Length: 148
Image 1 (cartoon, one colour):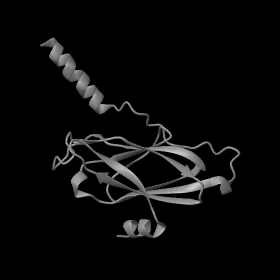
Image 2: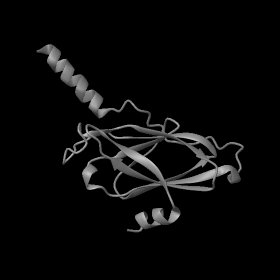
Image 3: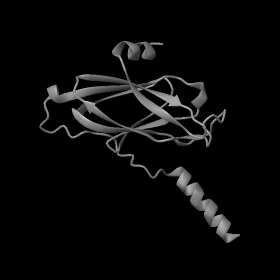
Image 4: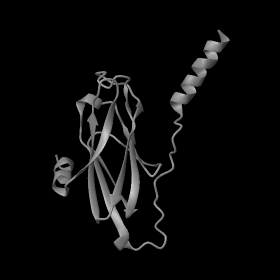
């Protein structure tokens, strides 16, 4: 009985505290001119399949923000190669469309060489656990999603 109680305590403790880094993403901009920066804007349109998912966005292993439905996040970053990751963890899914009430982490490497980039986060369901996919969109599509 003591073992079960200790196991439940550990499970509760792990569910309250995340193991991921919550260090806010601040790229090293020392000695970088503004002409070598890219402005990155991300939007997450509303999706009834994932009403309980708050998608965590990470860049180069550092936490940027947790994005809910119809929210946007913008930041500047140095041009070059960057690793983006979206993750959810466990969530209370109603309906249980994502299999285990969560979503697999999605990682993509992106090369920044333009002044502005626009992305949207969409859920891609699969048989057991889906993913929140980060895909590049045009500025017009971004503005239409933001100004709904």
